[in-house]
Image (cartoon, rainbow, N blue to C red; front, side, top):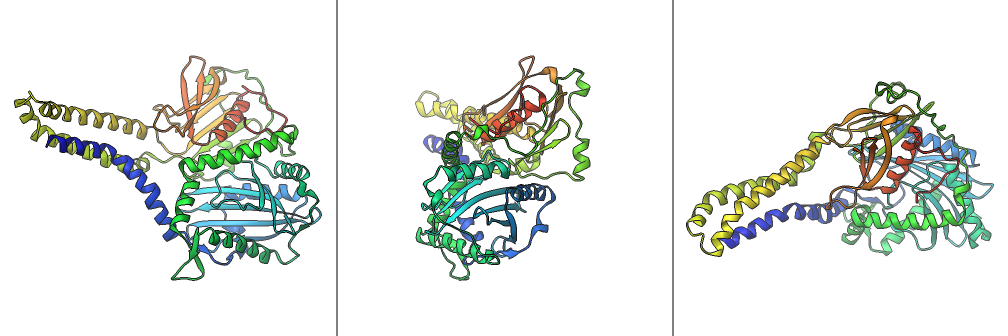
Length: 490
């Protein structure tokens, strides 16, 4: 009985990890195969610009205007078919530069179930031999692997189309493919061109056995078990980090070789903040009324999504989506189930095994039985305390407002989740690993005060994005000078 009790205890302790592995490698691939079909033929419909959320449309239109300044003509809009992905709204703008014989694409997507928003832009050249040469900017990993015939660079630190086009021009000039004849779709043939591009991707996925025609609906493609597993691997955990690091190293090597650090983007940058003259904490930072005046609604961000806004003349507003306490507690149901199992096991062992063990405390089995209830009680109290602190640190969307006067913060992941700091009390901003050895994939942006206290501001697995935010907030506070050039993260 004692041996079985220890086996049950080990199984209970392993329950959260087993549930996590089940959800990641069994439930998610099964859901991809069931709920995420792909169209056999391109089902893009013309139009759809008005389907975007207002804050997503602002960034979408800004990129389009920058591509227009680079010589691209906006030829058509397409949006996705709701039948294939009912909870995803995606709008694509297709642009052509017939003078340089280049194409560009801007895709804005929004997941209505998670409120996730993404904008992806790319510029490229198509050659007569079927190869392609692309330069892209995107914040997240790609779903499908690259075509070996394509030469692609993905720079996740680029934020405007001018820098993207200049990076593409320099890459193309340094490539031996610069002399190859290029092709562009004829006027009026843009939709047929996009359909042929999707057919090329579809044939490659079919050849790789990642998808197969659906038996019930031949107009849809379903993921195979192999395809669902590979897509899950590319979009989560180690596979996502590995792909991001590989793409970043490849693009940053080209960035350094082409001396892109010397390029000055024509996009207006925030002016360098003036040195503060008032150290009063009451005027620590500019209030966020100007942002409320420009956005007459509360911006909803998916957990982990980050949005930045510059309010003239010198205020930077950073928002990061975080769940509320109740939503976070519900999302941790495996931990709650684990605590309940530990509670039941502790009560059972204390009532059934403890008295008999004390009467026969001379042998090893009885001594191990005596240790069971204290062990489970300690693990349960430790887990419950850790979960309580994590729940208290989740209050909803994080809001940071930085200016030369200081920093105000709201809903940051600490027990004191809101407050204001004068510029004279801010010593430095640091990006450090998350202080939990179990979550070694996370990084934290800390604010270091003059008194040595560390205040966590943001937590995310994207270390490069966190470094970029650290630099922007430091520039808005006047800690670092505003650079005159666009540079990639180290």
